[in-house]
Length: 280
Image (cartoon, rainbow, N blue to C red; front, side, top):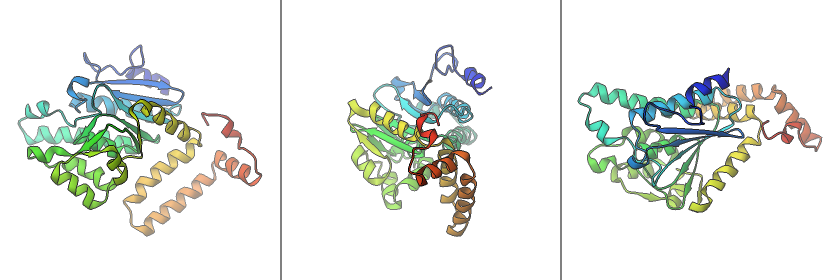
């Protein structure tokens, strides 16, 4: 049934087809799903259509247990330049703007709520809501040529929604500096500040992302999905509540068959049976 649901989102070829313009392309290979933003001439700006296509596809992938890792990538010279400013200028009421930003929030929270780790594969620029997208992904690997900014302030628009994940990835002062200056930082600085995990040469970006995905895939699925849910929930709690939830989560995790097999194998100094299966 899950495969049938996925086929409703995908065209005959492994692509998401959104009306006349394919704004998101989807490929699935060996348990890794790659969503590629496909508005290269617009620097992959997050139009309403793009946001809805990303959300719909992510929601379907979240239900597919054959998908172990999701990668968000982009076509063209840039990863994502943020919201589509031309589209925003065409709006005339606060209700229209609230609806747009609510759609953006739904997409961002879908990333955090899905059981699979989501990896941003970043090249070129990631600005404003594009930088927000990088910050919302669970992991991020960037080309050495990538640059990041929340530059709405340069236009008189404080990047309020990007500030939410940015302030949860960087230190407060580093995040606020980016928000009030609009200055760009390069990939190495983004790594040092905690916005991304790795920097790779442009020619090695694909390989670096693949290696990270394969390392995640080699772990039991229940541990990854359970751990991701716990990780984000406890961050918003006080320390006592966080420990209580963590203890409950570990107790539940310990009753899983793969977990017990992995621990038994470690005690007995042998390889667990699921380690022989890359889709375990």
